[in-house]
Length: 293
Image 1 (cartoon, rainbow, N blue to C red):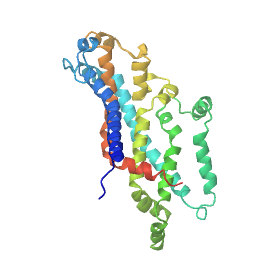
Image 2 (cartoon, rainbow, N blue to C red; image 1 turned 180 degrees about the vertical axis):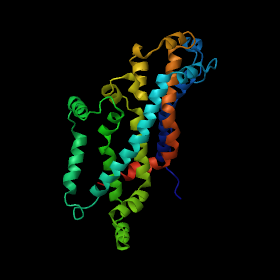
Image 3 (cartoon, rainbow, N blue to C red; image 1 turned 120 degrees about the vertical axis):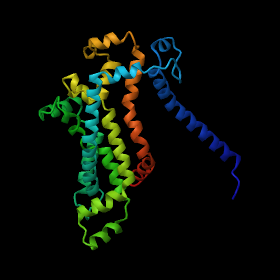
Image 4 (tube, rainbow, N blue to C red; image 1 turned 90 degrees about the horizontal axis):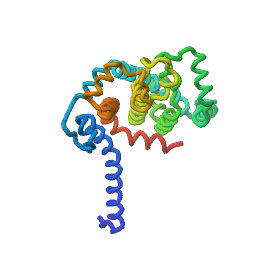
């Protein structure tokens, strides 16, 4: 094999250094938040905490676990993911599969495809969006967090392109053996599209879990907030109405920064636990779902 040139070696070294710096930029803030959450209030106030806990303490996590408001918001987010993600994936598959077929199989395929693309490129605006949801009567209900985004168009386009990359001969052979359209979809197209389905599943989980704006706009009562909306009001907006007398009394034992760090880390923990199981499909699903138009 030919030896790599000097320029090639420098290029590889630069890539490794760049990727290492990017990884550090993503990882170091997370380690700092984790270290603050496990440190004592005095150490954090003195600025002694960097990437390792100082005067190890679990008081911040005991405070977070003991907050019923935090637990209720956490459960709402879990339920939102448990209901919203399967609904998103079901509708995405049912929309993407027929749109992936040629015009000879689906006569109005182009018209429907452009209809969905236009909804992604042009929005009616915040006020029409809110008024539409209000007219359906689901404001301040759990379904207001699920139904408005039930069909993620970006996911539809990715899965549509992935379906189009599958060989037509496979489905034709299945049709000869007596398989119908539903059987071809669920027994052939979906299993062969496992990388794309896993990638879009991760997208849906992260979208539902990290979404905070809908909760603030569509929920009238704080007890109906999902976790990220609750954290936005407590950590960013600091809504004093959400604080109880017990919370104020605990500030003598824990600082504002340690409690915030503990709540942020607990909120990101579920996604950190789910991602490793879907990561191996992530890159393949993105690349294969975006190269074929």
